[in-house]
Image 1 (tube, each protein chain N blue to C red):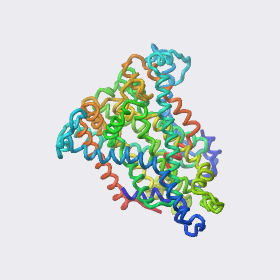
Image 2: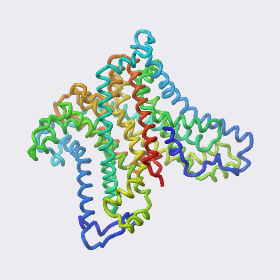
Image 3: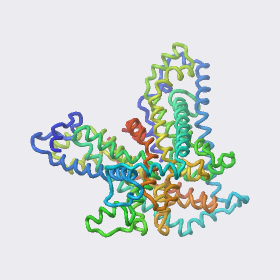
Image 4: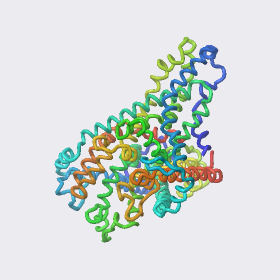
Length: 321
Length: 293
């Protein structure tokens, strides 16, 4: 995970502070002193806020995972009991498996679709048309997942939904989208991908724009056209972007909540219950805060492990220019 | 559509141009596929808008409507009757506005400190700030909820505002922004005898406004649409924000009338649409900032 940080923070130009030969006036003792004061004053709101609302809560979450607490009575230390219970709880297990299956399918669809569309948009085409497609694919990102899920619920309704109406035109009988486990899972995935592929699309557009035109010209001289051009030039040169897009897509898919909550409330049965949904339910519906924290800690460890594994793997497959 | 080949932009010739006279079937096929994707992307939203403009009794009728031929605004009137939408909008606007302004100011200050000021522990502190970006909100939500409760702020709008103001991503964005500004400005200012505070206020802060706008637009878009935290932090309906109110409207109605629910959805989208039209570029740049392009 630490490998992102140097990449992300690579400055566009050297910072003033590390630049040698800064005029002597700013190097005076009082100058440095007042810089330091100003720095701490400027940082105070952010650092205090993050400490209070992120760092302390992370620590508290880890501690809380070892206690049984329902807010009303005093917390009691239970060691690893919460973890043991959570791991054996069939609902928790199913929801983690659902989440993993969701991540695999949704991220594959999202990245595949985004890459295909980005390649198609990026090639020769009138500028106004390219702008139109970019805006169209970006559009769902500005909507709230809750509103999107509300109207998608109607579109996928079994009797009067538009999706089944179109299918009926093709002679396909009504699909019970939201009342069967498979159908619900499919709808949650489709709605999530519909809303989020635009983000990966934007990343790929940026990545494609950074591939030098000369590379394609050289490939064309060697006789690479059509598919071969993409397989041998675009894909390898795009691999850093693909890594970034997949890390971001996976992290965000692991936290899916709004869509399944509004579309299906996790049902039918537990078929669309996700990891975050069981955190929410055990904490705020059953008041088992220790258990909820334990699930949260497990989810965080999974996210960290996956991110680390991706960067490990990427050393073998990502090609930097 | 074949005529479009004539107007090919000369700026981005990814492939050597072929003969312009023959219809370019590759381009035609690509545009057809892209149009299908665009219709599938925009279609559900068009249907939402169009159906919200049907009368409640017509809203279930098939074939579906994709263009509002005779708009009927009764569903919109119904939304105002069934839902205190003015209050929801005010709540959402207040929460989102304060968060956006708060993030713009604090991120600009912290970003400036990380980019332009020297102090001990700068690198380590910045790494910590970046690392907090990786922590999902769901993991900290239980302790944050307790904390808010302990501060006596549960079920208030402040419970939504305060934890959202410190922003790791905004700080990162502003730091990048300040690093992109020329350093000679600070040198010139310090030669003129300006204090670091004066240099920030008169030289860098005015230049940072476009960067701050990106932070503000991103914050607006994210928090206007936020569902998870408001669902947990607010209990009484007078503190609901729009997404929460809409979900409860849908619950109240069951499957009673689609057009009323959709009218509510459309109303909630209006501010997002305004931001889309005026801030699209900034939003796209902000979302992909740091992707290293």
